[in-house]
Length: 148
Image (cartoon, rainbow, N blue to C red; front, side, top):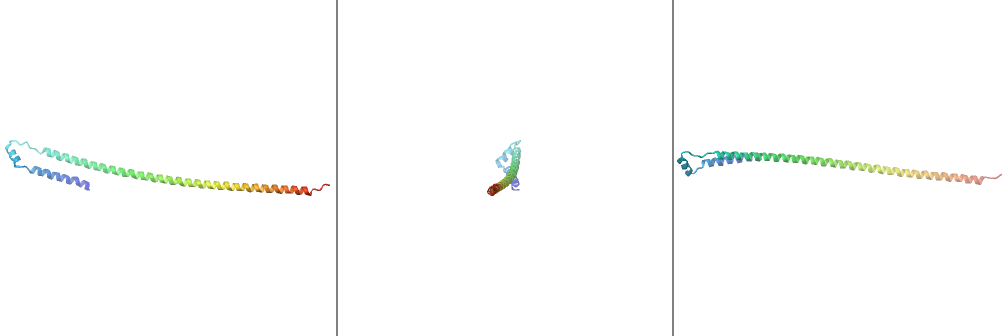
């Protein structure tokens, strides 16, 4: 509102000044007009000046509107950038979550491998025990053998 009120106040001030200029003629100019048969004075240049000033003010208003539009566009771009940043952050969080899941899976796989190794060791121990038992049976058989 202030931006719109300022040009109107300027127009009123300029019109008042021009009216004062039109009314404030010195006595010399009045006598010179009276002496001349056909006065060549016209107010066209002043009207042109008024029109030019009004056009300039309109141009200034248009420029202000354009600046406001540009500011709005910039704000819109900033909002878009913020949204993109948020999306990127979300993606990064998702990636981190996936990495954590992968690490957990790797840990589980390692645990499974460790369990498998333990099972294999247990199986080997059992096989060794079985072999020892078989050997002891053979030894007992040899000792208990009596030739006829």
